[in-house]
Every structure is written in C-alpha cells, then in structure tokens.
Length: 421
Image (cartoon, rainbow, N blue to C red; front, top):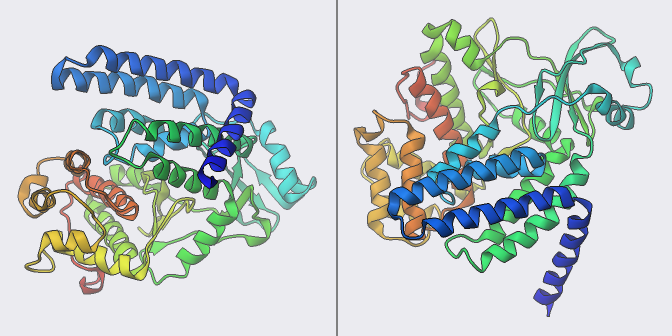
C-alpha cells in the first residue's frame, strides 16, 4: 500500500508540474517520440548503425536539454559524466552543455539581491560590474567591490530556477519510474534521485558556503589556496567570496607552457590527497575553476559540487587506486574491486581494467576514451559501480586529461611521499 500511495503522490505532483511547465514537457515528449523512432528504424542495422542511432538520438536530447535549461542542463551535465550508464556518443554530445550558459540580464537578478541583502543592497558595494564573469545553469557570478575597498565575487542564483526545479523534479521522478520497467541494466529511479538530490543541494548556496568552509580548513599544500568566504553577505541565493586575481589554468599554461609540469603535478597531487586522505574533494574540476596567480599558486574556486567519502571508502579507494597504478606492489585486483563495493560481472572484466592502467595502453590515448570503453564493458556485464567511484573517476580523468594535453607524466606517488617542488 505504501508503494501505491507513493506512486499516486508522484503522479499527482507530476500532473501539477505538467500543467505548470507544459511547454518544456511537450518538447520532451516530442523529443522522446523522435528518439524512439530512431531506434525503431535501427533495429536490424548492426553495430555501426546502432552507433549512428546513438549519435542522432543524443543530438536531439542535447538540443532539448539546452532549450529547456535549468534542471535539464544539470541533468545533461550529470549524465555526461556517467559512461557506466550511457554509450559514448551520448557522453560526447552532452558534454557540450558543460560550457557556460547565456548570460542573464542584471535587471532580472536585482530582485534576488534585494531579497537576500535588503533593498539597500547597492549601499554595501562601492562598485558592481553588471556584466557577469561567468554564467551557469543555476547561478551567475559578478565582480564587485565592498565599501571597505575589498574586491569580491558575488554569485547570484538565477531567478525562478528553484521553482523550475520543483516542476521538473516531479516529471523526472515520473519518467524514472516509467523507464525502470524498460531499462533493467541500471537502477533508473536511484540514479534520478541522486541527480535531484545533488541539484537541490546546489540550489541552496548555503551548502556551497559550508563546503568552502570545510574544504578551506583542510591541510592543503602551500601551492593550493581557496577564496575567503564573506558569511555576513551570503545566504540561500547569494554567495560572496574574496575575488581571486589571476588567470584560468588553461590560459596561464598556454602563456607559460614551461610551468605545466609543476602546476599540473601540484594539482594532480592535490586531488590525490583530497580523495585518498581527506575524503572530501572538489567535484567539478573545470579548468575555469582553477586560477593561477602571479606567484604560481593555484586557487580552487566553485564548491557547489563536492565529493564525500566515509573512512572505509577512503581506505578502499586508496588501495584500489594505488593498486591499479602499481604503487602498492602485487595485489589481487578482483579483491580490491570487491572491497571497494563493485558487485557482479566476471573477474576477467575487472582484471581488464587493471591491464588498461598498469600497461602502457593509456599512454597513447585520452584516459576518458579508455574509461568510457571500460564503463561500457561494465554496463554490458551488469557490474554495479559505486556512485562514489564514478565521482572519483570523473575528477581524476579530467585532471589526467590536462596532464596529457600538456604532455606531463602521471605521478601516482602518494602526496605524503613526494619531495617538495
């Protein structure tokens, strides 16, 4: 009975959402019909035809998410990091939505600032740049100066984004239950709830403020810094931090390629430390979230998405990562995976991952390509991958991509054993 009542409640909320956001949902239904038609035509075409169908369907879904905005873009970004769920053509298409969104008019943001800081909010600043420095699916960042002369970054939640999320959440839950009867390889309901919980947390900027506080208290190496939080000016819809002077990592490295090995080695070591020692890591390693100052120090910004690991997860993932990299000597790979929470599949599949990493097969290709290939094997073998491992692999693959782009060798030496740079 409880399950029936839950489904009735979800259906009622979905119906309310449909009425409120019917334009977005009519577009979704139209896209779904196109996607089903694509796969209907493909049924007997073989693997090459299936890849083409994936690419065509992914293009339609990416267009839908871009047009619907807000939660749909967050969903696209979320699933673009899940090669264990989606085939490679979807990952490639959805990754295009990782870039910044179209700026929102500052006039639309004034009511948000007024509600958060009071109608006299302009009096708190001596300068306020109306042109944003960054825009994403949930918030927009502006540069400003406090009356005491300090430069700050003001992150403002976009208007109506919370209301749109409430509408979309009802539809996403309904769709996940409908798809769960068709898709059996993945727990669609669980994955959808994970997406919604993550998005709900990011919508409340007080969570990001707490993430920054916790992350800043950790014993990072001196080459890694964080912004200073202005608690008194921060709230659910506004986050104010110190302004970080410098250049985005990629811009800096393009101008100073001789610094690539030092900077990227430092960044990679920092993420290893975050994962294998702290159990708290910044989970959005976009190159724009790393600012390099004149002294060559890296400041990490944007703490809306964080990965958290319990003590047992830290221990098991540390053993798994260092075991795969050959740092821990001879190990039983299958047992390491089992200890880390991987369930199902054949031992040969798990050992194949070790071969990709322990041999030189990664040296000539992008690590994301290899990992996507392996995740597809996991999906085919119905290996259950812990959600926390997906987050870890995503950040390490992204940082690894930076190293490969600038031809910096991977150094898997544990941070505490490294010599000072």
